Length: 120
Image (cartoon, rainbow, N blue to C red; front, side):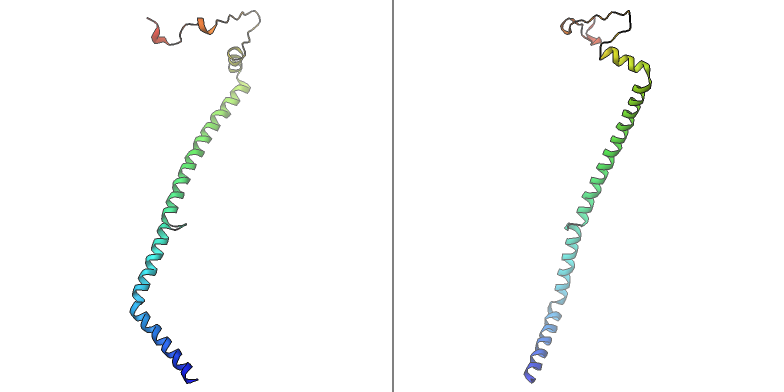
């Protein structure tokens, strides 16, 4: 039973000697590993910066979509209530005319160019 106690004592003295000799180095390596993990880890600094950039991009996209949505809502409102807008679409896109009006369609090949710079 004395030899078992001696072995435990030798083991604890060996561990203490090991820690005295390499403790600072082990602590430094542990701190270095933590710093590297905090910077390059899954939830580290670089991942956080990437996520923040994605959030900015998505917020900008949401702002653009909200602006476009407001423009489309205004256009829908105009199409429901503005008779001139409705008439313009009926004439231009559907080829409709008021009673008594005559529509003359010119083939695309015979139309003059629409560019005002081409006229002398």
